[in-house]
Length: 66
Ligand SMILES: [Zn+2]
Image (cartoon, rainbow, N blue to C red):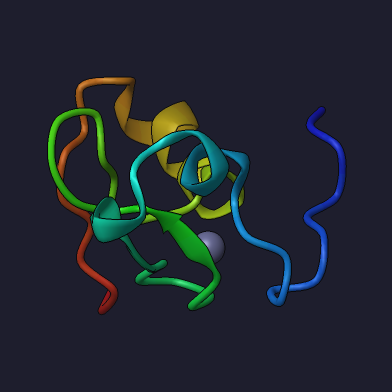
């Protein structure tokens, strides 16, 4: 199990180690995350975790509708 997600006001750790112009809001919870460019993801790690479990690490895009 992962640790519970911090409040959405806390940026994803990935946002702290990438350059600021690659940071954007998570598609799920709107927290700041490394969204753009190489290695970016539309979801923060907490939103991505259940998706990765279901689809595997190769998932690139996540639709927010069912
Ligand atoms: Zn999120």
